[in-house]
Length: 69
Image 1 (cartoon, helix red, strand yellow):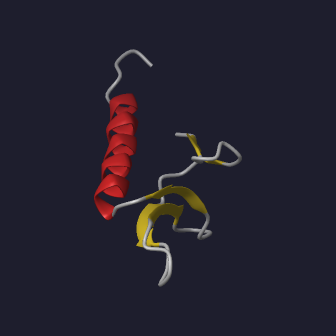
Image 2: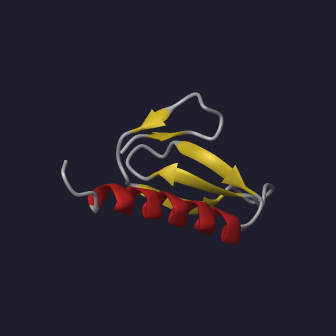
Image 3: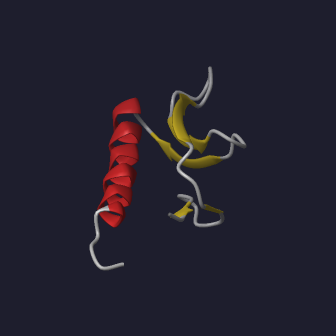
């Protein structure tokens, strides 16, 4: 599955994604590629980042369940 970053400047072809706090002075949360540490999207709350991550999983799962190729 291909995922496009929030700023539409990068694509990722794997699902090695995680959520982390942006930092001490920036309390936003990011979804990032755990293999290379690249941020893909930034969200105001951890809850919103989790919602987006679940949307990605839901969409990915729908492709795995298609019949007929």
